[in-house]
Image (cartoon, rainbow, N blue to C red; front, side, top):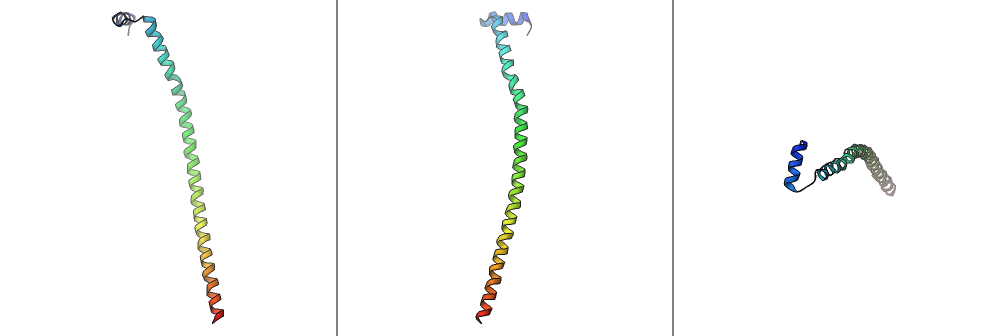
Length: 89
């Protein structure tokens, strides 16, 4: 708005031009930190996503190792059971 339009608007609404200018400045300042914080938040989110991916890969690796160990234990028990039964006969 030009100065003339702003003055007319203020007279119509019963405001002072200085008030409107202060509100505008305060509004602009209120939005500035958010723009700076968004960059920081995006960086943190990216770091967390990377950490989640790493942890998921590690979890998958450990689950596979656990499944392999469980299978080996089952095979050992079957093998031991087979030898124990053949000695009794």
